Image (cartoon, rainbow, N blue to C red; front, side, top):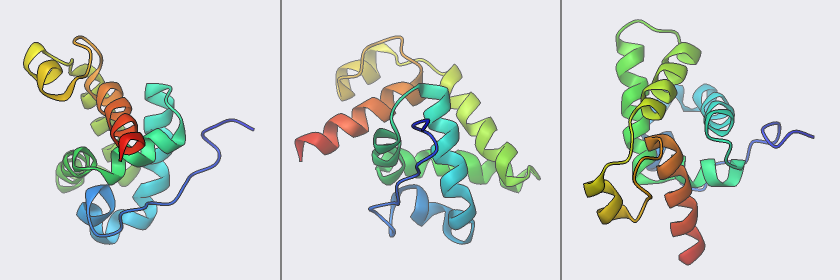
Length: 120
């Protein structure tokens, strides 16, 4: 079985991606989970940690901006993924979050969320 076939549930229903997406959350969650896992190559549990984090809330803001611009939900999520994969971790973000400089933003924050979750 491909690792993107099994979508874990959120562990943070009040905040992060789910809390920000509100009524769109049930449909958006599996699309975002699979799309981010595919784009970053990271496991679903790491993607779940990212979407449940404060960074997941910021990612959801990008999705909502696309929805408000008229994009259908799957395309809104893909555009947010593409945007976050285009941005690169800079020196300031690297120092502040401990993410290696130069990684795609989405990949870096997915990895960072998984590492943070493993520590707490």
